[in-house]
Length: 342
Image (cartoon, rainbow, N blue to C red; front, side, top):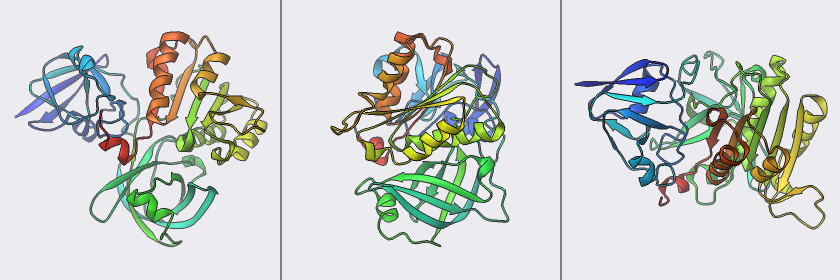
Protein backbone atom coordinates (compact mmCIF):
# COMPACT_ATOMS: atom_id res chain seq x y z
CA UNK A 1 0.00 0.00 0.00
CA UNK A 2 1.26 3.46 -0.94
CA UNK A 3 0.32 6.76 0.65
CA UNK A 4 0.09 10.03 -1.28
CA UNK A 5 1.82 13.12 0.09
CA UNK A 6 0.68 16.49 -1.27
CA UNK A 7 3.03 19.44 -0.89
CA UNK A 8 1.46 22.86 -0.42
CA UNK A 9 1.46 25.55 -1.69
CA UNK A 10 2.79 23.96 -4.91
CA UNK A 11 0.19 21.17 -5.07
CA UNK A 12 2.81 18.64 -6.20
CA UNK A 13 2.33 15.05 -5.07
CA UNK A 14 4.49 11.99 -4.54
CA UNK A 15 3.95 8.41 -3.40
CA UNK A 16 5.43 6.92 -0.24
CA UNK A 17 5.50 3.16 0.26
CA UNK A 18 4.25 1.68 3.50
CA UNK A 19 7.00 1.90 6.17
CA UNK A 20 9.01 4.30 3.96
CA UNK A 21 10.34 7.63 5.21
CA UNK A 22 8.99 10.70 3.43
CA UNK A 23 12.18 12.50 2.33
CA UNK A 24 13.92 9.72 0.36
CA UNK A 25 10.64 9.02 -1.45
CA UNK A 26 10.41 12.70 -2.41
CA UNK A 27 14.02 12.84 -3.62
CA UNK A 28 13.52 9.68 -5.69
CA UNK A 29 10.52 11.24 -7.43
CA UNK A 30 12.14 14.62 -8.09
CA UNK A 31 10.19 16.56 -5.46
CA UNK A 32 12.58 19.17 -4.09
CA UNK A 33 11.86 19.29 -0.37
CA UNK A 34 14.43 21.19 1.71
CA UNK A 35 16.89 19.02 3.63
CA UNK A 36 20.39 18.95 5.07
CA UNK A 37 21.78 16.11 7.17
CA UNK A 38 19.08 13.48 6.41
CA UNK A 39 19.67 12.14 9.96
CA UNK A 40 17.24 14.04 12.17
CA UNK A 41 19.99 16.28 13.53
CA UNK A 42 19.83 19.65 11.77
CA UNK A 43 16.14 20.52 11.34
CA UNK A 44 16.56 21.80 7.76
CA UNK A 45 13.74 19.56 6.51
CA UNK A 46 11.20 20.83 9.06
CA UNK A 47 7.74 21.08 7.48
CA UNK A 48 4.18 21.56 8.72
CA UNK A 49 1.73 18.64 8.65
CA UNK A 50 -1.63 20.05 7.53
CA UNK A 51 -3.50 16.76 7.15
CA UNK A 52 -2.78 13.12 7.93
CA UNK A 53 -0.60 11.30 10.44
CA UNK A 54 3.08 10.36 10.59
CA UNK A 55 5.33 8.45 12.98
CA UNK A 56 8.78 9.90 13.65
CA UNK A 57 11.91 7.81 13.86
CA UNK A 58 14.84 8.73 16.09
CA UNK A 59 15.77 12.42 15.92
CA UNK A 60 17.27 15.10 18.09
CA UNK A 61 15.14 17.45 20.16
CA UNK A 62 17.16 20.43 18.91
CA UNK A 63 15.97 19.54 15.38
CA UNK A 64 12.34 19.04 16.40
CA UNK A 65 11.21 19.64 19.96
CA UNK A 66 8.23 17.95 21.58
CA UNK A 67 6.41 21.31 21.56
CA UNK A 68 7.06 21.75 17.82
CA UNK A 69 5.81 18.24 17.12
CA UNK A 70 2.71 18.94 19.19
CA UNK A 71 2.19 22.10 17.10
CA UNK A 72 2.13 20.05 13.90
CA UNK A 73 5.71 20.30 12.66
CA UNK A 74 7.48 17.25 11.25
CA UNK A 75 10.94 16.28 10.04
CA UNK A 76 10.52 14.78 6.58
CA UNK A 77 13.87 12.94 6.90
CA UNK A 78 12.51 10.68 9.65
CA UNK A 79 8.71 10.90 9.28
CA UNK A 80 6.90 7.79 8.03
CA UNK A 81 3.33 8.47 6.82
CA UNK A 82 0.54 6.37 8.31
CA UNK A 83 -2.15 7.91 6.06
CA UNK A 84 -2.29 10.15 3.01
CA UNK A 85 -0.75 13.47 4.08
CA UNK A 86 -0.74 17.13 3.15
CA UNK A 87 2.37 19.08 4.18
CA UNK A 88 3.35 22.71 3.89
CA UNK A 89 6.92 23.18 2.72
CA UNK A 90 8.90 25.71 0.74
CA UNK A 91 9.29 24.10 -2.64
CA UNK A 92 12.86 23.94 -3.90
CA UNK A 93 13.10 24.73 -7.58
CA UNK A 94 15.36 22.67 -9.85
CA UNK A 95 16.46 20.37 -7.03
CA UNK A 96 16.01 17.43 -9.39
CA UNK A 97 17.99 19.02 -12.22
CA UNK A 98 21.17 17.01 -11.70
CA UNK A 99 21.25 13.23 -11.24
CA UNK A 100 22.76 11.68 -8.10
CA UNK A 101 25.78 9.62 -9.14
CA UNK A 102 28.12 7.18 -7.41
CA UNK A 103 31.69 7.41 -8.63
CA UNK A 104 35.35 7.01 -7.71
CA UNK A 105 37.48 10.12 -7.24
CA UNK A 106 41.25 10.50 -6.92
CA UNK A 107 43.03 12.69 -4.37
CA UNK A 108 45.11 15.22 -6.33
CA UNK A 109 46.47 17.31 -3.46
CA UNK A 110 46.14 17.89 0.28
CA UNK A 111 46.95 21.33 1.68
CA UNK A 112 46.82 22.56 5.29
CA UNK A 113 45.90 26.25 5.43
CA UNK A 114 45.34 25.85 9.19
CA UNK A 115 46.44 23.27 11.73
CA UNK A 116 43.01 21.62 11.81
CA UNK A 117 41.80 22.29 8.25
CA UNK A 118 42.68 20.36 5.10
CA UNK A 119 41.86 21.54 1.59
CA UNK A 120 41.43 18.52 -0.68
CA UNK A 121 41.54 18.74 -4.47
CA UNK A 122 39.85 15.71 -6.03
CA UNK A 123 40.04 14.54 -9.64
CA UNK A 124 36.65 13.50 -11.03
CA UNK A 125 36.33 10.66 -13.56
CA UNK A 126 36.88 11.85 -17.12
CA UNK A 127 34.14 9.57 -18.47
CA UNK A 128 31.41 10.84 -16.12
CA UNK A 129 29.74 14.25 -16.13
CA UNK A 130 29.24 15.24 -12.51
CA UNK A 131 27.02 18.32 -12.25
CA UNK A 132 25.97 20.19 -9.12
CA UNK A 133 24.75 23.50 -7.80
CA UNK A 134 27.26 25.63 -5.91
CA UNK A 135 26.42 25.02 -2.24
CA UNK A 136 25.54 21.33 -2.53
CA UNK A 137 27.47 18.46 -0.92
CA UNK A 138 28.73 14.94 -1.59
CA UNK A 139 28.88 11.89 0.65
CA UNK A 140 31.99 9.73 0.91
CA UNK A 141 31.20 6.04 1.26
CA UNK A 142 33.55 4.31 3.69
CA UNK A 143 34.48 0.64 3.48
CA UNK A 144 31.77 -0.47 5.90
CA UNK A 145 29.13 1.61 4.11
CA UNK A 146 29.21 4.49 6.60
CA UNK A 147 28.98 7.94 5.01
CA UNK A 148 30.54 11.33 5.64
CA UNK A 149 29.22 14.55 4.05
CA UNK A 150 31.23 17.53 2.78
CA UNK A 151 30.21 20.56 0.75
CA UNK A 152 31.90 21.45 -2.51
CA UNK A 153 34.06 24.55 -1.97
CA UNK A 154 34.45 25.30 -5.67
CA UNK A 155 31.84 26.49 -8.15
CA UNK A 156 30.88 24.02 -10.90
CA UNK A 157 31.78 26.64 -13.52
CA UNK A 158 35.41 26.48 -12.36
CA UNK A 159 35.58 22.74 -11.74
CA UNK A 160 37.02 21.39 -15.04
CA UNK A 161 37.04 17.91 -13.57
CA UNK A 162 38.44 19.01 -10.20
CA UNK A 163 36.50 19.44 -6.94
CA UNK A 164 37.67 21.28 -3.82
CA UNK A 165 36.61 20.34 -0.29
CA UNK A 166 37.46 21.87 3.11
CA UNK A 167 37.71 19.32 5.93
CA UNK A 168 38.09 20.16 9.60
CA UNK A 169 39.88 17.60 11.75
CA UNK A 170 37.55 16.07 14.31
CA UNK A 171 39.92 14.05 16.55
CA UNK A 172 38.59 10.52 16.81
CA UNK A 173 36.58 10.91 13.63
CA UNK A 174 37.19 7.95 11.34
CA UNK A 175 37.31 9.88 8.09
CA UNK A 176 39.03 13.05 9.29
CA UNK A 177 41.65 11.09 11.26
CA UNK A 178 42.46 9.36 7.96
CA UNK A 179 42.60 12.66 6.03
CA UNK A 180 45.00 14.15 8.59
CA UNK A 181 46.97 10.92 9.04
CA UNK A 182 47.37 8.26 6.39
CA UNK A 183 45.78 9.87 3.33
CA UNK A 184 48.13 10.22 0.37
CA UNK A 185 47.90 11.79 -3.06
CA UNK A 186 46.47 9.47 -5.75
CA UNK A 187 44.32 7.65 -3.17
CA UNK A 188 40.93 6.59 -4.54
CA UNK A 189 37.76 7.55 -2.63
CA UNK A 190 34.17 6.55 -3.40
CA UNK A 191 31.55 9.25 -3.30
CA UNK A 192 27.92 9.91 -4.14
CA UNK A 193 26.15 13.18 -4.91
CA UNK A 194 25.14 15.87 -5.35
CA UNK A 195 22.85 16.30 -2.34
CA UNK A 196 21.29 19.23 -0.52
CA UNK A 197 19.07 22.21 -1.22
CA UNK A 198 21.53 24.94 -0.26
CA UNK A 199 22.14 26.94 -3.43
CA UNK A 200 21.60 30.47 -4.71
CA UNK A 201 18.02 31.40 -5.57
CA UNK A 202 18.70 33.31 -8.77
CA UNK A 203 15.10 34.39 -9.33
CA UNK A 204 15.53 37.02 -6.58
CA UNK A 205 17.09 40.48 -6.80
CA UNK A 206 17.33 40.89 -3.01
CA UNK A 207 20.71 41.87 -1.55
CA UNK A 208 22.46 38.87 -0.02
CA UNK A 209 23.93 38.22 3.41
CA UNK A 210 26.28 35.23 3.48
CA UNK A 211 27.02 33.96 6.97
CA UNK A 212 29.69 31.34 7.71
CA UNK A 213 31.36 29.84 10.75
CA UNK A 214 34.46 27.67 10.53
CA UNK A 215 34.54 25.39 7.48
CA UNK A 216 30.98 26.46 6.76
CA UNK A 217 32.92 28.89 4.59
CA UNK A 218 33.36 26.10 1.98
CA UNK A 219 29.93 26.25 0.27
CA UNK A 220 29.83 30.03 0.74
CA UNK A 221 33.08 30.27 -1.25
CA UNK A 222 31.44 28.18 -3.99
CA UNK A 223 28.43 30.52 -4.05
CA UNK A 224 30.66 33.58 -4.46
CA UNK A 225 32.64 31.90 -7.25
CA UNK A 226 29.37 30.97 -8.95
CA UNK A 227 28.09 34.55 -8.75
CA UNK A 228 31.32 35.86 -10.25
CA UNK A 229 31.32 33.24 -13.02
CA UNK A 230 27.70 34.03 -13.97
CA UNK A 231 28.16 37.80 -13.80
CA UNK A 232 25.66 38.21 -10.96
CA UNK A 233 26.06 41.52 -9.17
CA UNK A 234 23.51 41.45 -6.34
CA UNK A 235 24.96 43.42 -3.39
CA UNK A 236 26.48 40.76 -1.11
CA UNK A 237 28.18 40.90 2.26
CA UNK A 238 30.10 37.92 3.67
CA UNK A 239 30.36 37.57 7.44
CA UNK A 240 32.82 34.84 8.44
CA UNK A 241 33.03 33.97 12.12
CA UNK A 242 35.79 32.06 13.90
CA UNK A 243 37.42 31.86 17.30
CA UNK A 244 40.82 33.28 16.36
CA UNK A 245 42.43 34.82 13.27
CA UNK A 246 44.22 31.57 12.37
CA UNK A 247 40.80 29.88 12.03
CA UNK A 248 39.98 32.17 9.09
CA UNK A 249 41.98 29.73 7.03
CA UNK A 250 41.33 31.36 3.62
CA UNK A 251 41.10 34.95 4.77
CA UNK A 252 43.41 36.04 1.92
CA UNK A 253 40.98 34.53 -0.61
CA UNK A 254 38.01 36.35 0.92
CA UNK A 255 39.86 39.69 1.08
CA UNK A 256 41.03 39.33 -2.53
CA UNK A 257 37.48 38.49 -3.69
CA UNK A 258 36.06 41.54 -1.91
CA UNK A 259 38.77 43.76 -3.44
CA UNK A 260 38.09 42.36 -6.92
CA UNK A 261 34.28 42.33 -6.88
CA UNK A 262 32.58 45.71 -6.37
CA UNK A 263 29.35 44.03 -5.22
CA UNK A 264 31.03 42.01 -2.42
CA UNK A 265 32.00 43.12 1.08
CA UNK A 266 33.84 40.92 3.62
CA UNK A 267 33.50 41.20 7.41
CA UNK A 268 35.58 38.77 9.54
CA UNK A 269 34.39 38.34 13.14
CA UNK A 270 36.34 36.68 15.97
CA UNK A 271 34.78 35.40 19.19
CA UNK A 272 38.10 34.86 21.08
CA UNK A 273 40.54 37.31 19.46
CA UNK A 274 44.16 37.86 20.36
CA UNK A 275 45.17 41.24 21.74
CA UNK A 276 46.43 42.45 18.35
CA UNK A 277 43.08 41.89 16.55
CA UNK A 278 41.55 45.22 15.53
CA UNK A 279 38.51 43.89 13.69
CA UNK A 280 35.01 42.88 14.74
CA UNK A 281 34.48 40.65 17.77
CA UNK A 282 31.67 38.61 19.31
CA UNK A 283 29.14 36.24 17.76
CA UNK A 284 29.09 36.49 13.99
CA UNK A 285 25.30 36.63 13.58
CA UNK A 286 25.13 39.49 16.08
CA UNK A 287 27.58 41.46 13.92
CA UNK A 288 25.09 41.10 11.07
CA UNK A 289 22.29 42.39 13.31
CA UNK A 290 24.38 45.39 14.41
CA UNK A 291 25.14 46.35 10.79
CA UNK A 292 21.78 45.44 9.27
CA UNK A 293 19.02 45.86 11.88
CA UNK A 294 16.42 45.72 9.09
CA UNK A 295 16.73 42.52 7.05
CA UNK A 296 13.20 42.63 5.67
CA UNK A 297 14.46 43.17 2.13
CA UNK A 298 17.40 40.74 2.26
CA UNK A 299 18.10 37.08 1.55
CA UNK A 300 20.37 35.13 3.91
CA UNK A 301 22.56 32.08 3.24
CA UNK A 302 24.01 30.62 6.44
CA UNK A 303 26.36 27.69 6.84
CA UNK A 304 28.33 26.36 9.78
CA UNK A 305 27.80 25.12 13.32
CA UNK A 306 24.16 24.22 14.06
CA UNK A 307 24.02 26.59 17.05
CA UNK A 308 25.09 29.52 14.84
CA UNK A 309 22.62 28.67 12.09
CA UNK A 310 19.73 28.21 14.52
CA UNK A 311 20.53 31.41 16.44
CA UNK A 312 20.79 33.40 13.21
CA UNK A 313 17.49 32.12 11.88
CA UNK A 314 15.65 32.78 15.14
CA UNK A 315 17.09 36.26 15.73
CA UNK A 316 17.04 37.51 12.13
CA UNK A 317 13.35 36.64 11.81
CA UNK A 318 12.28 37.83 15.29
CA UNK A 319 14.40 40.96 15.64
CA UNK A 320 15.36 42.07 12.12
CA UNK A 321 12.20 41.32 10.15
CA UNK A 322 13.75 38.76 7.81
CA UNK A 323 10.98 36.78 6.07
CA UNK A 324 11.29 33.13 7.11
CA UNK A 325 11.26 31.99 3.50
CA UNK A 326 14.34 34.13 2.71
CA UNK A 327 16.63 32.22 5.11
CA UNK A 328 18.55 29.34 3.51
CA UNK A 329 20.89 27.22 5.57
CA UNK A 330 23.18 24.23 5.71
CA UNK A 331 24.05 23.30 9.29
CA UNK A 332 27.29 21.30 9.49
CA UNK A 333 26.40 18.33 11.69
CA UNK A 334 29.30 16.03 12.56
CA UNK A 335 28.84 12.39 13.49
CA UNK A 336 29.33 13.47 17.11
CA UNK A 337 26.46 15.97 16.68
CA UNK A 338 24.23 13.24 15.28
CA UNK A 339 24.70 10.82 18.15
CA UNK A 340 24.59 13.49 20.87
CA UNK A 341 21.50 13.78 22.96
CA UNK A 342 18.74 16.19 22.01
